[in-house]
Image 1 (tube, rainbow, N blue to C red):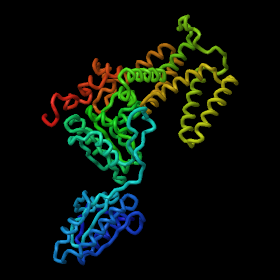
Image 2 (image 1 turned 180 degrees about the horizontal axis):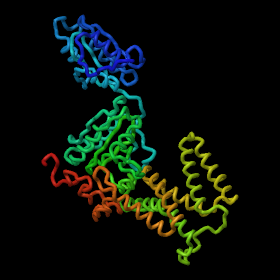
Image 3 (image 1 turned 30 degrees about the horizontal axis):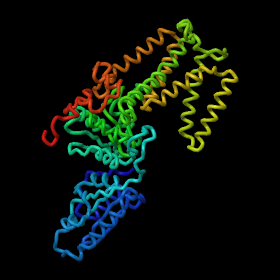
Image 4 (image 1 turned 120 degrees about the vertical axis):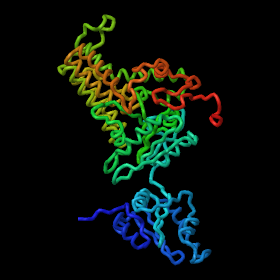
Length: 497
């Protein structure tokens, strides 16, 4: 049985003791990706500890080259610690005194420099994480606008945000979550805009997370933050676009950025935050409003169209004579309700198959599904054409929903309404829709009413939900975030305020 390593141990004066401790703690000599480089400077041993693959080798080589020149310019009587510190050619150098700090930093991609006879070590930030370059997110594409997006590198993500908000009051506070993973988590906010109570609530919840690790990154953090439980609706908003994140910061929201994830969490959010898209703000107000209403129509069709059609199929007397042609014109041996459920499962299976199919083959698979499976299913009498039509319209409405999480929630609610209509008819439809609305009204993630500005009703804010208002006319920040500075257009320059 191995003994537990006490990483809170202070750094030893004898460098050999430090080497033995770190060999046991992080596996020097056993793990090939962690190692040590030893130098002799002014007749004293210097040791560099590093993690291969997370460091920028060129910077480390430059640091070593600079230190090797010390013997040519200094005498043995000088204090080694001061000389080393002055000859480190890097802007981010910190001093630590415990192994706990050393281990966390080395395994995060920084290097630690130990000196013989010193009870402290230098930490130098030479991180260079493997990853991709910023690209436009697949799920948030726009016709006009920036083409950069967040990546899996938390350093790049904070830089992309700061590039858009060059304000000295922008804060990026970093935490480490996970007893073993030590994952970097950053909360980003504008100090004189964001609600201090909201910031404290988020910090407290992050500090209370007690788990081995968060390999699923932001999704795990979300579950600790808002306690989703059996609720299918998204309680936080995700974005991979820095411009969207920056816009929310200026409204008083707080961002949560998790290392290894390209998605950024926006809090607090309401239901209506999930129905907006960046494309609406890249167009003029009138076309933007048109796009928003088309999107609303698609979302309503995805949620309510199928249950409503099933209702009028079961009770055709509900239809006025002018539209009594709606409904299946062909007889089928399979009940309409069962056809709808089978079609829903089929479309969802095709969607998952498309995700797991290599791109060159996914197009061919879609054609096979649409032409062969769909048409043959109609020809053999498994489906009537109207079922395929309305299920397809609902599917297109789901794809038009800006938030993928909201689209999945709408699918689940649609299934619930279908079962309510099938078993209880008109009362089932009315009660089902009412129950969904009441459930949404009852949600208060991070003490925020989920259906604001509909309930509680805020006329001005609700108009901005329905209509894409011109930016010069939006002079105030949304009251739902309870911002400290309510005005988006100050009367005098910020430097004078």
